[in-house]
Length: 211
Ligand SMILES: Nc1ncnc2c1ncn2[C@@H]1O[C@H](COP(=O)(O)OP(=O)(O)OP(=O)(O)O)[C@@H](O)[C@H]1O
Image (cartoon, rainbow, N blue to C red; front, side):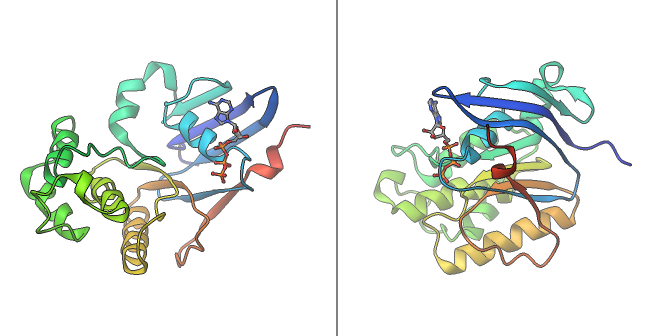
């Protein structure tokens, strides 16, 4: 059996004196698409924030390629792309400038990748418009453009299809499928019905709810 990319061991998380989940152990393998499911408030966003390193309020252990997460934080940060509820787009900057920030901290991304990504998300022609003048969906697209640029093997995506039109959703789904086919991994939450034809592993937080 191959070493999992990400290993979650006996995770416990409490918020407001309520146990969100406990005894949660789970492996994410290369090439796996994992959908975290559960009702509103069950802790999906909280789990994704923990897995991406944005929240450290939990008990349990995380391993990246077999190493304790605390020992490989930098390597993990460079190997993971997180897409959260907030688009993380600066309104005063144009789409191109926003992506340039991202490219600056990921040296493997070149100029061509950046322009291709803007084209792919349908923002060609908007390069010079400040993001505060764009629609909510266009701002999400600026953020999603990172998926076309990144070389990170693990994508952690919290509701990536919110505010995206039908065509955009189909394109993003195709992108996710391509990523896992090429050996990448995706952990996502979505209330949207996935049309992914390959295997989807469901991690149901109701099974780990506190008693
Ligand atoms: N920083 C925090 N402090 C206190 N409580 C929090 C915090 N973050 C989340 N919670 C609580 O934890 C619970 C789980 O929230 P979370 O956003 O993870 O759920 P979710 O499954 O993603 O929900 P939804 O499907 O509605 O997006 C909620 O009751 C929320 O109020």
